[in-house]
Image: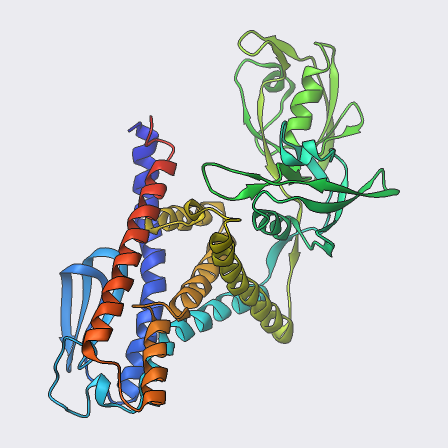
Length: 444
């Protein structure tokens, strides 16, 4: 492992585990607080599995932080089919079905409520939101977008007959197509509307379909190389480059191409620094390594955004809308996996989630909070699905008990739980392996 891998790991682990533990805590606290309210005795409230590292007791409940941080549990009296119980009224199985249903759905409900509160507070405070332009800033060479004839500067109007609200939604919808042709309506030169057929291409590494298109973005100076023309001209990190010789720059790749196209002739860069526009004249030099003309900067990009604040009602509505979209996306993703449009490797396991939590915080606090809301919504939806060993599976057992007027036999419950556990164990091992091989330094 390279040193950069160690530094990245040292950053990602604590940040990611704190975020993951917070999500698990919210979920288990939902089960815990409702169990207490309906009179069920709780033996253990644990964040994590395995050996108990830190533990303390309060009343009848032992609270602990355990060695394996990927999950947690609430152990209630009379909950497991293996627990014979004593027939006490404070045991889970002895409580009325409505009380047990309330306990089962309380975990997902707590995650949904937490996600709503996060986004509500964020929208009330104010967030940086991308401007609504759907103008193509870059077309990846050999991509589905290029093969469909889409060019830099085209404005995307609709995908599959439906208007798109932004690049995030566009990429999500493309990912769901799974390599199937889809009509894309574009506008070229601000006048001509046309529809092209684009076939998103499956990415073998991530298991989702991609278009190879990105939106226009502000081009920033991310790094200035020492001893190169850019340094001599006084360019600084953070400068926003507007144009080259009066031609607007829509993307970092466009800047690189225009500099190389100068063939060493002087160019004029219009840039903004501290809200003041400047013009720098620079003569590119030939880089012996790449055989391309350069000015000596590493460009970065930042999608144009604007600060948007909302009132109480507006923040509530948007929070509900965004969490609803996240929940729908989970269902669409699993539907895509079942139909083959999305590969199973597109799912992320705990290692991948830890990395993404840390990565979102590295971008900004806003990105971190938005991602935490997304994770909580995802956990809620996944847990309420009617699958064995999930909260949704418990709900199904209880509904069958209400219909049959007696619970399923212990043998049947054992078989279902063992099959479910085996399935989720295999899935966990698979997605964890995918997480590991996606780590950049793993194969180095």
